[in-house]
Image (cartoon, rainbow, N blue to C red):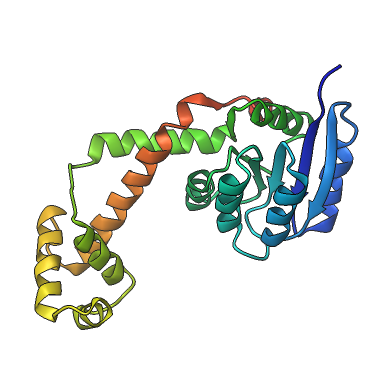
Length: 234
């Protein structure tokens, strides 16, 4: 007899959540152990019920990615599978970096969702093929276009603050350093990023960070199951 795959479902849309639950409870070796509607519920379910797979939406009350991160640390046996409408690359990166084992769009069919859950439960990473292809494309682009840039910790701090709109003076006050020191670090940042001014420096820094994220996720993608919803492409 197959062992049960215990599942938690967290989504702030009751009809969708109940529909997913109704689909999954028909599967002989699936057991829906609990449902929730927010990031806090997700952590509670992970801690109390310790499901094998926890389905979570991206956009719901609370800090979803912080919840995923907390679950991956406190309950590493609970594999989080994001089930969402969000095609945002930032959301995909944030979810995977936080410890999610999969990212599937809500347009997936019932059988495809069932297979995705099985794959995640067995230890695979599952990403909707369209999104996985986009991430792989980004990574290949970053490999081809990325210059070797090594910003110091302080330079990273300063350009990140500048990218939010702070002036040199405001950055200096925030880090309790002189404005002259901030200008020196910004000069170094612009030289390393081949930028002629602050606007170009911020743009180049943002691309640099995007390349770093793509590189960090690339190690996950080769083992990704690309067939969870391939039938929808036919």
